[in-house]
Image (cartoon, rainbow, N blue to C red; front, side, top):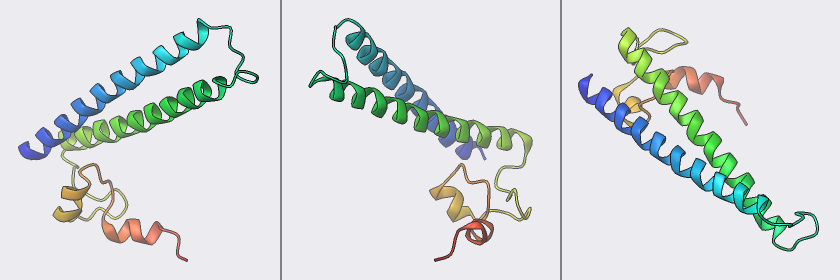
Length: 117
C-alpha cells in the first residue's frame, strides 16, 4: 500500500501543479480581455478570447474533478477501504487498480451499470 500511496500522492501533486498553471492562464486571459475595449460579439478576436476562457475553464474543471478522485482514493486508503468495491464489497482486481488507481468499483459492477447498446 505504500507504493499505492506514493503513486496517488504523485498524481495529486501533478494535478495541483496543473491546476495552478491553468488557473494562472485563465487569470491572464481574463485580465487581457478586461484591459481591452473589445466586445466579444463584434470583435473578430472576441470569439478567440471567449473560446480560450471557456477551454481553460473546462480543463480546470476536469483537473479539479481528478483531484477530488485522487483525494477520495487517499481517504479510502487511510480508512482501509481502498481496493474494495463500493457497490458489492468485493476486492477490486489488482490490474484494474494499476490502470485506474482511483477506481471505486470492480469491473463487474461498473459493467453492470454501463448502458448497453
